[in-house]
Amino acid sequence: MATSQDTSSDSAILVNQRVGNSNFTIGFYVTGGSFGSLYIGTNNETGEKVAIKVERADIDKPQLPLEYGFYKTLGNYMIFIPKIHYFGPCKNYSALVMDLLGPSLLKMNQICGGHFGLVTTTKLMIQMLNIFEYIHSQGIIYRDVKPDNFLFGQPNTSKWATVHMIDLGFCKRYINEDNRHISYVEGKGVTGTARYISVNNHVGRELSRRDDLEAIIYMIIFLHKGQLPWQGLNVADLRERTKQIGIIKMTTTSKELCSNMPVEYENFLEIIISQFRYVLFRMGITADDNYYDWDQSHQPRSENKRL
Image 1 (tube, rainbow, N blue to C red):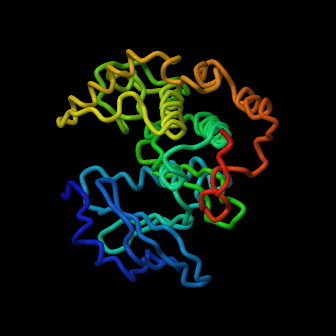
Image 2: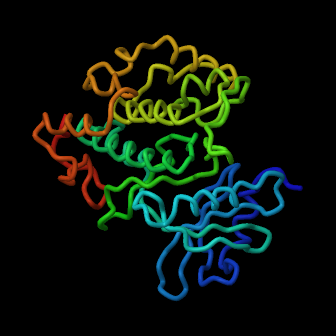
């Protein structure tokens, strides 16, 4: 069996191919990695553009069917979960057809100069907490928090500022078949991106909801400040670098990490969404006033950022 995706040689094979018995045809290749490749496709009936994620069907540990299962569990009715249109075969691949979304949090952060103002940061925090409140209520933990995995809706639509969660391949149920929380285990490997993962993740503990939440705060602080204390380590070996990142996380206090930010961020794990709304209230701003550091076309605003 194959053990990885061969995106360089296989990308042209799928162009113009129909996905199963659907009305969707694969178009041009966008990007790829060890967990599949992404294409832009077309609904042949409506002309609507869609995103199509593909994965070789003969790999040892296929992830796409599992990811499709999590999308089905979470449903097509939540505005922050992209709608799934079809899942089926395409030549020797599995293909998942979903809504085509806009730029990622990382892309918008880069467009906005590597720094989101505090208003935008706090609004994003509220959205993230809403997303994860729902995900966790379904008995699922995400385990792959990073700004690449959260996309806004298409520009100049009603969802231009709505965050959507993608790439559910690392998801895991934390409630077992007996409706009990999974057992505490040590000696696990690292899951996710070292920059954002929790301390528990670094030391090999079984992950749970709190670890998703810890990863969120690291990501949000990165988006606001543009830098985390453990970035830029001059360590070539990936395992050693991950270890050193964990050590710095453990020795960096919440006060240091959240310096020059509202105290609510420092106390993140003990507070609720309403307190982030209160951050905006103190500024005389409502969470739904549609102001971000970019406009509906996903272009940075020319005026100064709100903090």
